[in-house]
Length: 433
Ligand code: UD1
Figure 1 (spheres, helix red, strand yellow):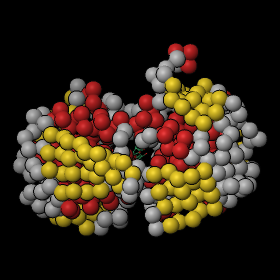
Figure 2: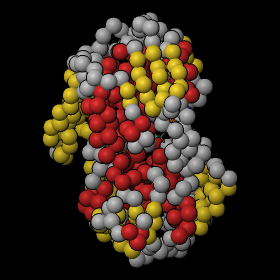
Figure 3: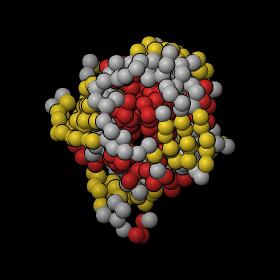
């Protein structure tokens, strides 16, 4: 297994091109299952999660082509998806266990083919992550759901039926799945208490370009008038706000200055406000965000994760690393996932001062320095927090289990090297596992 080796202490300076959003791309790929025509997605990030989703769709019968492309002068990929004939309606355990977002095939397959068998994803490193909201909502639309042998067997007699659904909790995944189920349903569906993440807006935009009738995009009430058939479309994936936020922290933590090309500040209001409150200079341009922390003395700031437009749970670990370099104490409250402080023990090994209280809160106190160490993380964003700590630590940090980072950060070393980091990918060494 590959590792990332970092020698800390260099302020980062330059430009980083922000890739297409992983969490938008995954449901968008699955939306292509809703039509027998071709759906083309541009600005696709090159990530292992995308490869895993493509492999799942190919197994279902989707024909996929990829092309080299350019977005704003940067090399990216364009993918086209066509599911004319379906070969399987099953998302097997081997795919779902590798990537839980595989559950995005459920809504589209049920809507277009009236059937889907999906391995239940089970819990993961950050929490239990049940699917009860997805399933009870699909049942309200007339689906028959049975759970047997670790699989969800979902079936519908004819088209799903439009209805009024009040989600019992705000869920990104359930909102996307129900949106994809409702576009081909009979009649009108209203999704209330829907998640408002920008990735959901991107999905709704693609679906409307395919002929769907969705209103209320960007709000917590989505109204979907079902249509008989959808057609092909071409769509550019939005920039990854979590990748942008992660590199914003890289600039801040190293007291450097990075221009995040293509980042959209309207998707990052809370994190940018926190950075400003801590003392970082932020300049928004039409096509970028400049994060300037040169010579800045940062102060601690409390954060609490919430559904969008609140502070994203996917940036909590990265900001915790930053708080270690601020004067005074910062309190971090995690309200979305019950086990999302797995990076703390690793940061402690590098000299951090963090006290975790229960599952939901942690006090972070600024420290004079961190020291490099071999570390490993259990999830994607926590791994990036360790990279950030490595960027300022004295000596060498080796981040193990790089496959977590490869799930969500395209060309990580290349991008960080481009702004001056001393970072390299090295082949596995069992001593560190
Ligand atoms: C998505 C993102 C993930 C992000 C999360 C929260 C993708 C591929 N992943 O995950 O990066 O951290 O949103 O912004 O886009 N819940 C239930 N029952 C359900 C569904 C969810 O109890 O049926 C709970 C979850 O356990 C969690 C909370 O609701 O505690 C929010 O989860 P959800 O918004 O669904 O997250 P995901 O879609 O899994």
